Length: 167
Image (tube, one colour):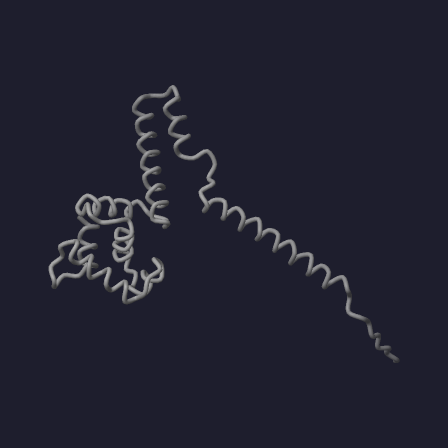
């Protein structure tokens, strides 16, 4: 029995199909990135203030309207605090910052942000990188914060922040 070996050129259809699939995947990823960028840049549609106005205009039960308004105002507070600190904040983060501001009126926004990062267990190196200073500069900031907050010499800022968050 004679067998004939047939040499064929690789099909050009396979690479073309692969390229088309990859281009389709890239296009889908670019669309997703654009969507995420729009969300994170603050373009979220009508916004919470407009929603609040719509709630006020609705003809519904007063108690329901009050609950909806309170929830909306709470979300507005979280959103504005997040924008102010250029960081996504949780409810507990906003509550912590509120307590800290009430107890220590003299803290500026940068110091508040640093206190939040300390509470969230960030290392000096990480915090320094995030706020754009050297590690040594961060140590100086912590030293000044220690005195500004009135923390005893033997207590840590991290411990103080943890106690304040729980209180």
